[in-house]
Image 1 (cartoon, helix red, strand yellow):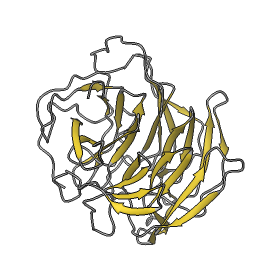
Image 2 (cartoon, helix red, strand yellow):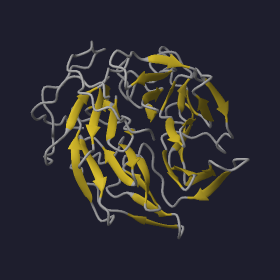
Image 3 (cartoon, one colour):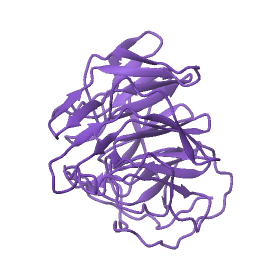
Amino acid sequence: MRRLVYPLMGSLALTACSAETPDDDTTPGTEAPESTGTPVPESASPTPVDEPQGDGYYAPLPDPTTALAAAVLHDKLYTYGGTTESAHIENNEVFISEIRRLDLNDPDAEWETIAGPDMPIQQARLFVYKERLYRLGGLIALNPPEEDADLWSVADFAVYDEATDTWTSLPDMPDTRSSNSIGIHDGVLYVMGGWKMEGGSDSWTYYDTWLSIDLEADPMVWEEHEQPFQVRDHCGGVKDGKVYLIGGMLSGYFPSEPYVYDIASGEWSTGPELPIDHPYKGFGCASAVVDGELYFSGIDGVVYRLKDDHGGWEAVDYLNPARSFHAMPARGSGELIAVGGGTGNEIDAIDLVESILLDGR
């Protein structure tokens, strides 16, 4: 059962700038829960797509939040960290410390806080592998609002136990890292791109390496590999044994084509041009892999799917409103959930949690 509210309507102009399948076909509710700050849009679709099927919204986040991590496990939506302000306000009061959870099957459920590392963090990653929830990396803020930025990437890696509400530490990454993408193939986690921050807002180093670790090995051991480019704040995933790094940025340069790593050959190439008609391209995009298909959405609000021949992208639906620096985990094989994010050039945080149905698309 999907807890969906706020029906979608009409068309909106752009502001410049792993899980289990639900088996309950109960009709979702139409009542609107109290929002924590983001008005429900009256219209959507900056780019035309055929028969958009956005199906409504879940309960809003406790706070408008951007740059958060999210994943779905056993029909529960988990979020980790994020910031309640625009991209350029960075301190330990606006960065969120909690890991939160919402039961997607309970129409009366409210967000709850579960155990976590209690770090004010953004740009971390949550993912599910074989019905277990993992957290990885991120960027923490040590400074209060009245002091200069003191921002540090972290090397944290841990796995969650639902039964005991506890986390077990796993081997830290070889160095601290944030704003990276992740993908999983044949039990191996691929950690691509990102950067390392060490204090002030200008104390950063882009990575020219990527990491891998076998999630089924005992012991788990990180391996580091050369990467022939640098990028951060991108998204990605794996399709047909190829790891895609979509969008992102390198010091004001916004890649228009994804970087693609062929796992079998060890070779890098570029993929089909991103169809986003905006200078930011895929900066701050979100992605998910569903039944082997790679989806992403970016600042234009369209949900795209990589074509089977890897030769282009097809629009399958849209988000309302368009956003970036959101999360978009999959719920089973039939649904994506767009969580939070920010609108416009300033990436103003929103609290909306939107369902995108994939059935028949």
